[in-house]
Length: 154
Image (cartoon, rainbow, N blue to C red; front, side, top):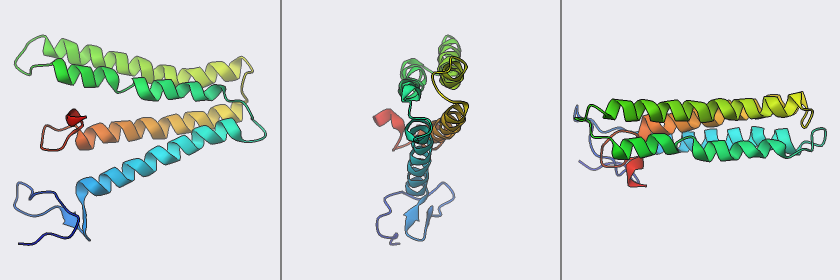
C-alpha cells in the first residue's frame, strides 16, 4: 500500500495509517505546537513592545520557558522503570518543574506590583505564559512516548 506523499509514519497498532489529507498526525501536532508557541511569544512581545507599555522586563520569563522542561528531561534519562527510586526522581523533577512554572507566572505579577510594568502588560505576559506552557505540555504529551521518534533523540 502506498502512503500519501510526505508521510513517513508507519501504521498504527490497529493496522490503519494515521494520515489524513496527506498530513500525518505527528506532523499535524508539530504544526499546531509551532503555531501555539508563536501565539504565546506574540502575547509576550505585545506585553513588552506596545507603545503604551514599552518596558522589556517581562522578557525575563524566557529563561523560565527554557528551564521548565530540563528537570523532566533529565529525570526521563536517569530513571529506570524497574528502580524503586525512579518514582522519587520523577516526582522531584515534577516538583522542580512546577516551581519553575509558578515562578514564570509570579514574576510578571511582582513586576506589576513594583510598578516596573503596567497591569495590562502583566495580563498579556500571563496569557503568553499560559499558551507557551500549554504548548510545552502538549509537546511532551505528543512526543514523550518511547517510540521511534521522540524528544529523547534530542
